[in-house]
Image 1: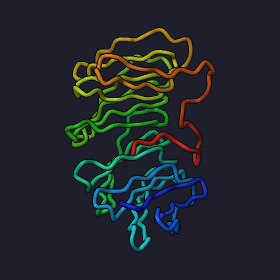
Image 2: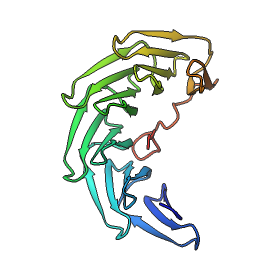
Image 3: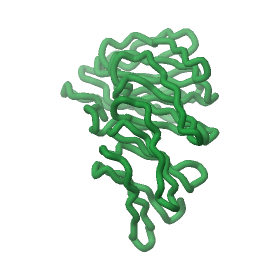
Image 4: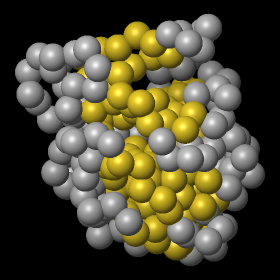
Length: 235
């Protein structure tokens, strides 16, 4: 966006800023807290998501937007797929949705039994890894809509990441453990050692070590909240 920036707020608006002059223009349309947004690759549009249960596709020049409605509760995050014409969202309602950004049509993916906290599209663009407060991760085929549960944690999953090799994933949980997953077989190995909930992990550049953030207080996972409260995002 060059000398411009896009921000979003609990005041239910986004703002487009000119970083040189400091001037801004409000983008209004959501009726709940704006939880996240991402600027599309064409640099003229943005996708936002909110606790009001909708996503909105914005024209950054005119300020006009179109609502993408389908979730029945707050949207926790979204990711635009590599082709720029589709987006994946995940929600407090326990589902993911795959959107055609041109048509506004979507298809739901049901399998989790509680809020979906996050998701990541695999490099091939045809599969997605999601994680939830139901304690499971799920590996989805975006074409068929089918999924396979990856079970091993005994409390909600706070986060996950796909490793650089594309065939393994690392997850971390309120149960105090990390798990290293083989995405093809579904097998996992527990990484034990913490005495409190694991709330974040960063894999080091060598790909074989990880830095872990742990909380000694049994608090809700980062980004957790009821409808209209901030949620996990991957933008």
